[in-house]
Length: 189
Image 1: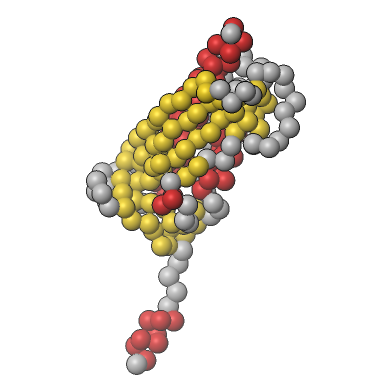
Image 2 (image 1 turned 30 degrees about the vertical axis):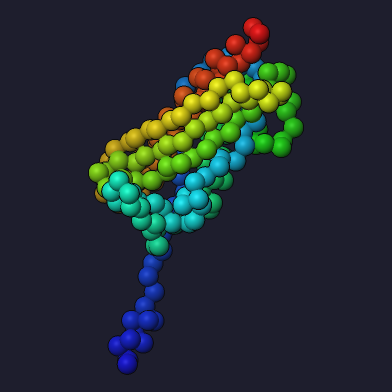
């Protein structure tokens, strides 16, 4: 009986993670002068809990119990994307949905749907989903799927979180380029 009490009294350390700060500034995508409203990402239901996800094979996933996100993942992803787009589009007003825009038109609205944000058993970090860019009249100007993979530079959850952050930044680069293209097209129409 005393052995069970001793085991039950031991605590298991939990590690909490945030996405790392961007290691390099985003490349300027173009001269976009307008506002970008960024909605909170819609997350697949299995990504909404605190545990970091590992994909074990083609059909099984594992949610870590001791390696957790420090704050809700959707909030971290929205803020990091807002910062990234702000660097890539320095003349744009990049806002969270609901904030008032000070920049002139075009006003573009971005919705990200994240279906995958996890490690894989082959040593890769995977970010996947779709984005939709709309104008103020709710017309879809761009709708694309994305899947970005990054190799882990080391074993363990810290390396996974860094690789996921790098993949998210790559998505930010692609999204910034598309926003510039869409804005040019919207202005000519």
